[in-house]
Amino acid sequence: MAERERARAELLALLCENARYSTTDLARLADLSEDEVDATIAELEDSGAIRGYQAVPDPNRADAERVRALVELNVTLDRETSYDDIARRLAGFSEVESLRLVSGDYDFALDVEADSMDRVSRFVSEKVARLPEITQTVTHYVMDTYKHRGIEMGGRGEDDRLSVSP
Amino acid sequence: MKLADRIERVPPSGIRRYFDLAAEAEDVISLGVGEPDFTTPWSAREAAISSLERGRTSYTPNRGLRDLREAIARRESDKRGLDYDPDEEILVTTGASEAIDLAFRALIDPGDTVAIAQPSYVSYPPSAIFAGGEVLSVPTRAEEEFVLTREALEASGAADASVLVLCYPNNPTGATMTEGELAPIADFCREHDLAVISDEIYADLTYDREHASIATLPGMGERTIVVNGFSKAYAMTGLRLGYALAPPEASAAMTRVHQYTMLSAPTTAQHAAIDALRNCEADLREMNSQYDRRRRYARSRFVEMGIECFEATGAFYLFPEAPGGDAEAFARTLLEEAGVAVVPGDVFGEGGAGHLRVSYATGLPDLREALDRIEAVLE
Image (cartoon, rainbow over all chains, first blue to last red; front, side):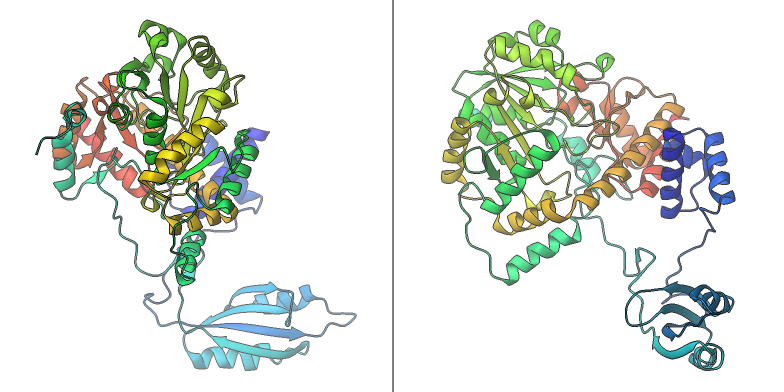
């Protein structure tokens, strides 16, 4: 069982690092057989521990000029409406890239993405702000991205080590 | 100008030509590097910058900043059961290299014999000779996974030596020694009154096991100088910071040499090191798990290629056998035909002949490409 846990944790870490590792390489990296790798990944996927695989594009270089904004939402709850209810309504919109309930000055933090600033504005004012539970919205347009999903977007550092050293 | 005899006694390395060749070659992926590919954790670098901004650029006490010695004492005690007093038994040095040099100068009289378990890091024999010692090589063998044995000590005549040098986890083999394997070595040293210089610079880089220090064995603390530093574990090679843990007399002796020849270790680096000990444990763990994955990956590849490669459990080296047996010839072939640099094992003493030191302190994409190229050359 401990070995199974170790395999799950190690493969999850490896796939988070690079989801494109081949089964063969994963087996070598995690010290497992290829069959064990396939079975464990299937298990991680089936159980919902892994929800998907995505590339991490540099937003500054991606082909289409996408506009991104962070949106803060304040809401009021009543007997019939919970955070989950509001979250479900918001999460359905394709413009919403991520949605989190947070502590602090506001309730929900959204990452919103669309083709133009106008589209983002219209989405926030027409779709989000009009929900009856939403009492306030604050929209921050993203001006530059320096680090995303743990990856720095700047140039890669050069390896300035001596090529051979004892 | 007439040069001192001891300089003549340390000839320039015969392998220099290969190193020069590797340094000049273009498009080479190097698995020959003896330092981490990671950069120093940002928190430690930021502490160094901040110390500069505040103008902390004067000498420190000879032994090093008190805060640093305290942090070292706490960490060595918590992590490895090595209990040393920050005021009398810890000395901060300019790299572990200085600590090794000081240890020899503190322990060796002209003509004393220094037994060195080999293959090992290239600096021990020259440092011992510069201190006036005679070098006795004690071989470790591939069949025993490069662990030092009592039999090897006896067979090589180490009973007459005054100092034994150990380096586990080992450069170049990646071998480690368990407490059980160290015990007979400790017995031998006590019986024949040998002091031990234990270079534990790779102590934080062990896989599937915890590091064991010979200094923790009964009666060994009083006859052992433990050398460690920040270069490997915290990827701080260029900051040049090491330390020595030693019983009070030996520590005072080393400090006496240090105070006249070095005065104090680099101040900026000491500030970085304090931060490293306080705040960089998570970075250390992350680097460790990266090395571990690469270790498993690279070893699997060698085994799949049919190359004999024992399962190293420390440092960031594998020590596979060189196909064909001639390590330098094979290393040249790899360099010229595949554009991959490795270090022929002969560099590290007789016992290293016929092996290659392959460093996995290289990102996985390069490591994979290098191994693909080695595989292609073999075919």
